[in-house]
Amino acid sequence: MIYWEIFLAFFIPGILGYGGGPASIPLVENEVVNRYEWMTTQEFSEVLALGNSLPGPIATKMAGYIGYAEGGWLGALVALFATVAPSLILMVALLSLLLKYKDSPRVKMMSSLVRPTIAVLLGVMTWGFFADSIEASGGIQTAVLALISFVLMEKMNVHPALVIAGALLYGAVFLGG
Image (cartoon, rainbow, N blue to C red; front, side):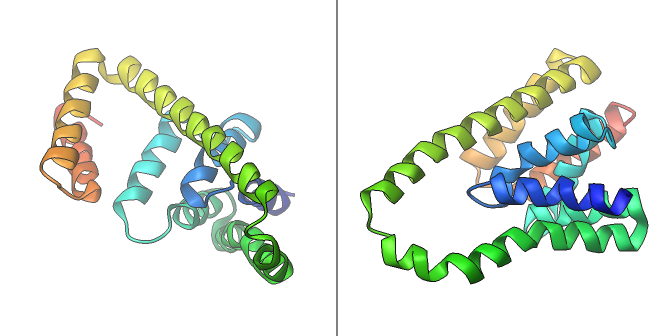
């Protein structure tokens, strides 16, 4: 039963997560944290941060880790397959149809309506991470880390993986994490 749940937890977000891995992260969070209760929001945010610091697609890294944590090596394989299966199915089944209607006003309208929805989902997830951080570490620590991260990435062009690694190190040393 756990393998079926692992499959569904990653297959459904893969189908509904229009826009790739980052767009499906809030949907995966809902499955993993709220539906199956395999992790807390804090644990999920730590897995997300770790996944972001490694090269490659975020959704598959998270699926592999969470699948392994819940079902061992077979769970990791099931989660990885479930993550990529929707894309494989759509690529094989719908490629010619999409190419045929790519300039259709209806297809363009659908895309323009879905993008803001994904942006709102990512914003809600980010707000939840900030709220958890404020509760766990305090508002000042959270504000300082957010400000330093913003300056490093936006003003000094430091790679996000280095910023995440630095924040993890800061948390381990100064916050007892």
